[in-house]
Image (tube, rainbow, N blue to C red):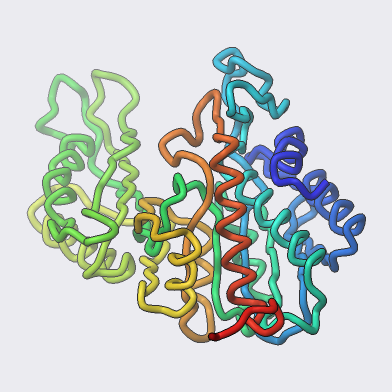
Length: 385
């Protein structure tokens, strides 16, 4: 069962929605598959129902690391699906199901590629070992990637491949992420005498122009522009009472020149300046922060990957992946690419699907890259002439 399409269908049949994020069954399936294929495998549990799984081919102390998450977003209302979201149904050259694109197809091509390398070459013929790291909790808290920092993989990893859905474009950068809550505290009063209170909703709404103007207009050649989404606003209980509390939750997706941590400090200062002239008080709470990461197209491994893809387009991701945790915590610079089958505009939706030919193409490109980099020309029977 080394065919990437067969593996993908089996993975889709296993419910790994997050929440609740229980990945025991999918980890058990991969563990059983690896043992049946005689591929060394280790499982690392960081919570009772959540863990990471590690498969390695080769014995070199230099590693090409492939990381893919095993959890998916919830299916939502199954009435909005044309097919059972856990069936892996194949129709008109597409495979449907939750996780078909994000990112069980990426996991499938990684497992299938490891099997192909394992079958074709012996460990002594490999200049680099290849490790697949399957993580849990990427969709909610990146908990698996954070737990994996203790495994020592980043000490030996020379290159990172994350097969997230990129429509077969080669991702070399991710936007930074900053999720914040801003809480305004005012003073309640009767709705008939609003002048006796401080309306927290009205005061917090005055921040909107400041929040939007705070993001840079700089256009990054790969990532585009920074964005802001004010996704939640809460406040008040009833129309005839002046609200004494209001909260907004904001999602910033950031490009250089400022990393999210720097931007958060700038934003906090602007809110403090505004608060000096407001009758309300304000509090800023950071809910999530992930750095901008970028890989150089001039890096040896990145160039090799581009060559294997036959010069497919370069792109950037507007969302964070496990790569943000791994790259930013590596003891030395860790070049990477994000590359996989699936349309990133069709993930997290009903009738999630992936094109079968796209899966096969992604597998071929990944495998060609791994053979080119991990197996020397002499051991492949090639000549420099």
